[in-house]
Image 1 (cartoon, rainbow, N blue to C red):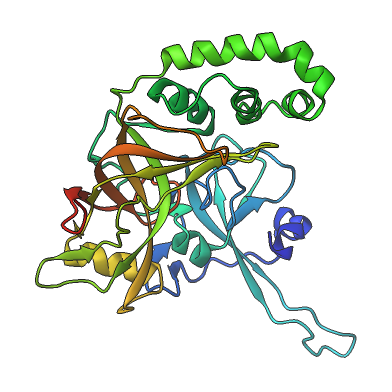
Image 2: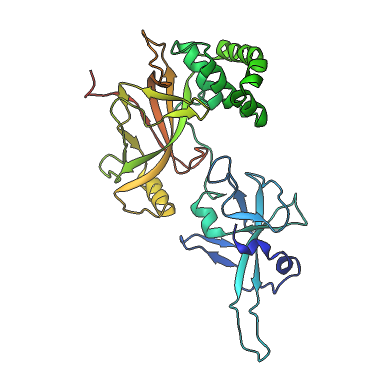
Length: 336
C-alpha cells in the first residue's frame, strides 16, 4: 500500500480540506461527485489484500460490498522559511463508512476502478450453471479416489492432509514420519469420509486465466482460446509428493458472445482497447468421469477425463462479478 496510508495525522487533523470543486473525473473518464455512495468490491486477487485501498490506521477487515461516501482531503503544499513551495499540493480520496465513523478508508480511485475493487455496475448475473460448486484443493484427492484414478495410498493420504491447510499440524503430519504414523488412522478416516461425500454427478467449476482474440463484430463476441484435448486448467497440491490433475476432454469452447458495448467497457477498464489479445478469467464447468482401465505410472500426474460443459468469462480472477459472457462446450472437430 502506498505511503499515503501513513498520512493519518494529515487526515485526522483536517489537513486543508477543500470541497470547492465537487466533480471528480478519473483517468478512465468516469465522473463522480463528492458525497456519492460507492460500493466496495472484492480484492483483485482472491484471498489477498486490497491493492487500491487501506485504513488510515489499524488492520481492520475491509467490508466487501459495503457502501461508503466519497470524500476528499487536499494536502496543502509545504513551504520553506522563505515562503517558497517545496512540495506540491496533493489530493487524497477516501470513503466514509457509517459502521466505521472514526476511521477513514483511503482509496486510490483510478486503481480501484481499474482493478474492480470499487464496483460501479450491477453485480447480478446468471451463470451458465448456477448450481455448480468450485472444485477446491481439498476435493482433489477424494475426486481421484471416487473416480477410480488412485486408492488410499500414503501419497494420497499425505496430499489430502496437506490440502486441508491446517498449518503446522498438516506440515508435521506430512514431513515428520513418526507424527504421520501417529495421525495416519485419523487422516485415513477423514479421507474416506470425504470420498463418500464427493458426488460425481455434481457440476464443478475451476477458475483460471484465459486469453481471447480480437473482438469479432460480425458475431458479437470473442473467439475463445482453446487447447486441443485439454482444458487450460491444471490443479495440484504442493505436498511432499505433489498430486496434479490435468482435466482432459474431447470438447472445447470456441466462442463467447459479448455485446459490443459491454466489450468496449471491459477493454477500456483493462486498458487493452483494440488489442489483438485480451486477458480474461473464467469458470470452466465440468463433470468428472469414472476412470476407464486407468493405470498409475508413479508420476502422480493424473489425466482426468471430464465432461467439459461450458465457460463463463469475467474481467477479474475472483469470477464473482463483471460477467462478460458464456459459451457452451462443443465436441472438437480435430479429435476422434
